[in-house]
Image 1 (cartoon, rainbow, N blue to C red):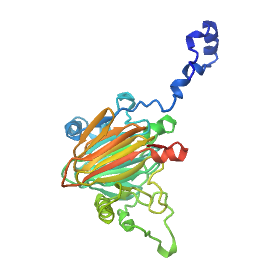
Image 2 (image 1 turned 30 degrees about the vertical axis):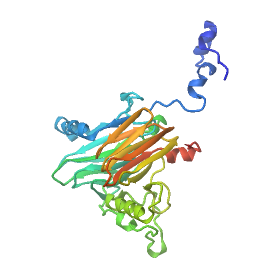
Image 3 (image 1 turned 180 degrees about the horizontal axis):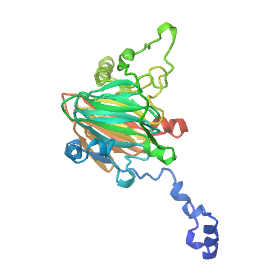
Image 4 (image 1 turned 60 degrees about the vertical axis):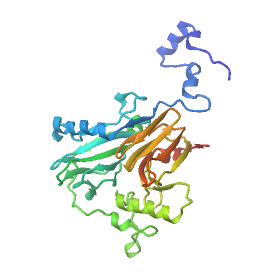
Length: 345
C-alpha cells in the first residue's frame, strides 16, 4: 500500500485557507479512519473484580443519600476510551448500582435502552410502566427506551445490580436524554410467568400481544433450568448457550445490544472465534477464566470483564466438578442490522 501525503506537506497558506472555511483534507488522516484489514480498536481488555468494587459501592451508600444521587452507581469505565467517557466499549455502558433497604430510585425514562442483571440481595423490585418485576440474583430485567421505570426495596439487605446500556451509541447520535416524574400507573404483577414454556405464547381470544417488549423479566431460575436441560439433551453440543429473546417474535430482546447466558460444563475449555462485536462477560455462578492474546482474567462470582471486538476468546471452567454460568452482552444485533457483523475463524 503506497504512502499517503502528510498535512505538513501542504503549503501553510493553503492549510489556513482550508481551516478558514472549515475544510479538512482527507488523505493525511485516511488510514486512521480506514485502516487496512482491521479497525483501530480503542477498547482494552478490562476486568472489574466484584469483591474489590463492592466495599467502594457500599461506601457510596454511606457518603451519598439517594436524593443526592437519583441513581447510586459506580461506572465500569474502560481505560482505552478514557475514564471520563464512562463507557466499557464503544457501544456499551456498564455500572454497578446500589439500592439500600427502604430506598426508592425515582421514576424516570430515557432514550438509551437498559437491562439490569441482579448481582446480590433480595426484596427489591423494578417497576416498568406499572409492571412490578422482582429482583433476584441472576434475573435479567429490561427497561427499554422510553419506558418509565423506578426501583424500590422492601428487603433487609443491600441489593446490587449490573446496569448494561447502549448509552455510548445513543450519546454519540446526540439522542440521549432523560425525563423525570412520569405518570401514575396502576401496578400489575410480573408477566414473565405467561412466557415460561418454550414454543407457546399467550393468545387470549386468538389475539397475540402487540407490545414491542412483551417480556420484561427473565428469571434466572428459568434460564438456569433451560441451560441444564440443553446440556442434558445434547451432550455433544458445541456450547451450552441460550439467548434472551422477544418471545413473540424470536428476535433479540432489545434492538441494539444482545444478551445470552452460557453454561461451561465441568472442566470445559471453549474457544470463541474473533467476532466484530465487543463483548461483556459477567460471572453469575461458579468461576471461569477469560483469555485473549494479551490478557487473562480469572472471574469469580459477580466479576465482570470486557473484551474488544475482532478478538478471539478462550473460556475455561475452573472447576472439574461443577458448571460455571456466565451472562454475556454484546453489540452484535446492532452490527447485524448495519450489515457489518463478521466472524473471523
